[in-house]
Image 1 (cartoon, rainbow, N blue to C red):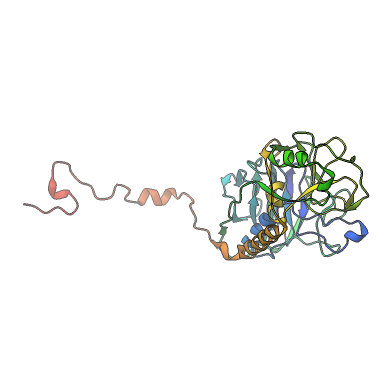
Image 2 (cartoon, rainbow, N blue to C red; image 1 turned 90 degrees about the horizontal axis):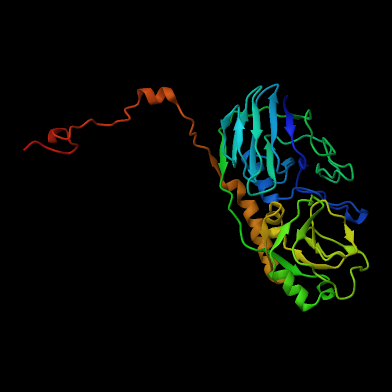
Length: 344
């Protein structure tokens, strides 16, 4: 049995899979990966099920070390510098860590979460068919908390297979929302302000909620309603008028009016928005939201078919020494040495 040791890791990193479903009636939130498309892409590279558990790595860097044998991993999601044994490695590829080699990840660039999938998956004890960590509830396996230096994953030894790469489409544009379910608690002016404004994710945001910085959204009838159910992407507006997008570790119910709901197809893009980066919302109808969800699911199912064998670009100095890099030598003053030329 090989092991992958967490040598160093920042906050906001934990084990996450597709989520924990069927228990919201008990107040148990689904949790799961913030960006499920990136989770599925990383798993596709190492032959795991699309929603298998992986290591969700927050904006800060991390270092992992292979022990007891080789370990194969793949990294997708927020771009960041990646090195194996001080050799640069591309994102969206698989790579084998030999015994004692270190995988070093830098700070995220242009995103918030990256996903480290391990060939053979992460063993653990599921609760409601999920290993996903919810630190507030003390749930998750093998560590029911954010990861820390010294944590060890017992994993399958790397197989004798070639390294792979994947083409992950880049999605962009405004974050689309369906208005409501309590948009009638806001005036037409406030709803228009919400949609036309630039918003920024606050640095105080976390997996429970993304606080939005921007204009104040005022209520028509006060900020308290009878508590009702929430979903991933519900946008609540509390008494201070600063919207909060409910994320993967949200509570299952809430008592603030919800002006809009992020569509499922765009939730991962919102989750990847770094603090301080401007974003806009665009209202769409329910039919369009459902059509986009179907397209999103089709894209996710297509990911294994987007995996191809990685062509190595490693620099080989020995091959360079023996190569004829100059090609056919010619003389500018001797036409007989020119390719294709014939003597007069």
